[in-house]
Image 1: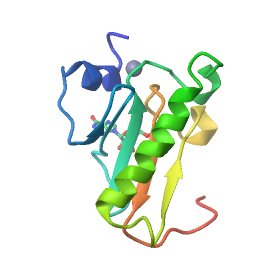
Image 2: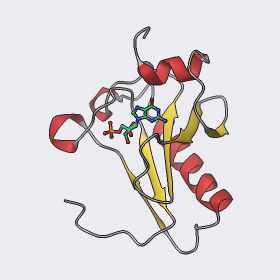
Image 3: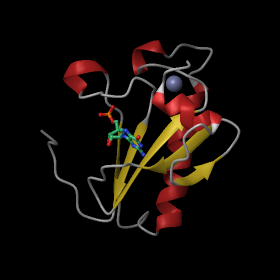
Image 4: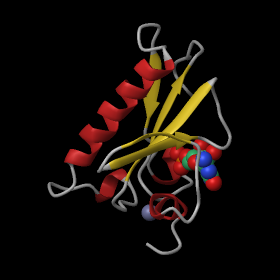
Length: 114
Ligand code: 5GP
Ligand code: ZN
C-alpha cells in the first residue's frame, strides 16, 4: 500500500526507532508513548485490521506475539509483566489501518482500560 504510514516504514521510506526485526515483523517505538516502553509490532505484509486476517496470514499474529515477548525480555520487564493490545476499527480506537500490536511495559497497568 503506497500511502500507508507503516508500509513506508517497512520499505525504509520512513525510519522508525526500530527495536526488533525479522523476515515477517518489524517493531518500533511509538511516537506518543503511553508507558515507559511503548512499542508497536507490525507484520511486514499489509493487513488493514484484525478483520482482514484469514488462514493465509493468521501465522503473522503468532509471530507478532512472539516478537512482543522477546522485546519484553530485551527491555527487562518480562517477569514484572506488561500488556499487549490490538485495537480494531472505530470503537476499538484504531487510528492507523495497518495491523499492529501495542506492547506497553515499565509501569503497572490498570483494568479495565476505558
Ligand atoms: P492505534 O490507535 O491505531 O491502535 O495506534 C496507532 C499508534 O501509532 C498510536 O499509538 C500512535 O501514537 C502511533 N503512531 C502514529 N503515527 C506514528 C508515527 O509516525 N511513528 C510512530 N513511531 N508511531 C506512530
Ligand atoms: Zn500498510
